Length: 172
Ligand code: SF4
Ligand code: SF4
Image 1 (cartoon, rainbow, N blue to C red):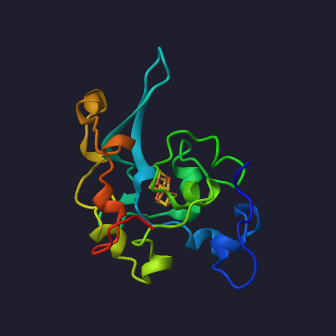
Image 2 (image 1 turned 45 degrees about the vertical axis):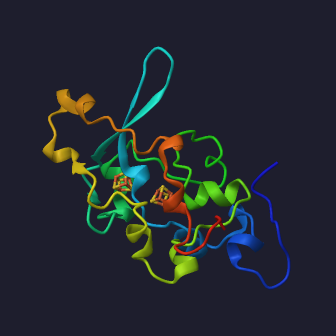
């Protein structure tokens, strides 16, 4: 069983609370701002395999890696998935670095998460975010989307060095 509290006493909220116990502000602050979940994905009709592209949703600001209309995103982009404590464990394409996935799986946040580093830029400096790696769907012809399939989000291709704090020999 995952998504359960793993600590008691004075500990950070993401360790002390289950996802479904967090306040709205705690929940929102958990997002690391990587933008990886805003990449367009292709699903194989035969085996259901998911392929990521380096094309991002038209509402994503590819510099800040934040949604430009977060409050209205579900209206403007009906396919935008709203994460909840209930569905985080069932969305199989969430990146392994996603803070919601990590907490749901009982893992700690990485050094570059702003709740650890106290710097919203570290997710970009670590190379984990989509900054500098993507194009907007507004700039891509629909029929050419397969040309943008990428490999850098594949779990086996996530560089261990990205997940490790500089000058630390082992991951947190
Ligand atoms: S992948 Fe997770 S942490 Fe990254 S932007 Fe999406 S919800 Fe936030
Ligand atoms: S609507 Fe916003 S949150 Fe949803 S996929 Fe697009 S950019 Fe991301």
